[in-house]
Image 1 (spheres, rainbow, N blue to C red):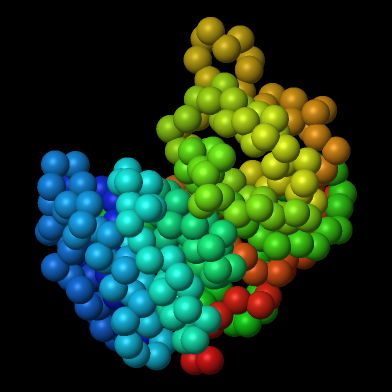
Image 2: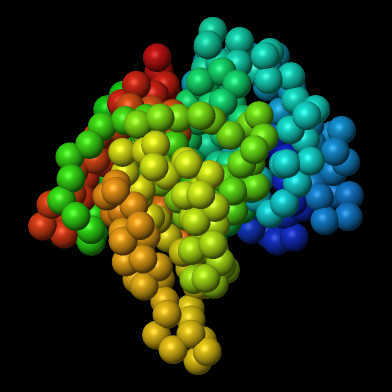
Length: 304
């Protein structure tokens, strides 16, 4: 079984019971969970001081042990406060020598994009301790897709989709949409041409989702990709004022503006049901007859 090393670079885990439930589940499955002290650490809304949270990341460069999975306790906010305090060169050297399998999402997207930008380091966008492994009911789909990604050097995810038929290949990248847009114009957003960009978010009204995607469009980022994949956007219900303006309307508008295919429907994001995707890996996206497949390869796996 695997060693799971916890970090807490973002928000304090207000649901301590869920965090401890996640630890218990992982241990019952035979995994060792270390660095549990970060679960209770707190300063204001954050999981400790900036220095403590930055040390969680910097210390990974010296972390020993094969088959180690690095997992944030939760997301929230706080990772972007640390970006200029991280020794990216040391982290990237460690990953090139013997990669840790780093998995998280939400606010952690900022760290993942910085690693991809600074050293072409592949990380996994997937479940975290509190919200996923610590959920009241553990989602079997999420668990299966998590281990599928971390154990297989090539794997495929499938889903019911909408959008034009396509068959494209490129580097998979992306994650949380708000975090991606917050990195535009900074050194920590990867400059990827010919990629497959996958995005998700939570509790963002459809107009905010559209506004963030338009920021990527006007910055010239979307036009350089081979495809855009839309994941989960829960909490994005329209209101009476919208008069029919909703997420499908946003997707249709994007398709009218973009020359690249926009494919939606992927179970990816802040939901209990989510796939795990290696950001920075090689990807082939095929969409036809409302069924899409995304085949990933070139990422580190357990047991290498």
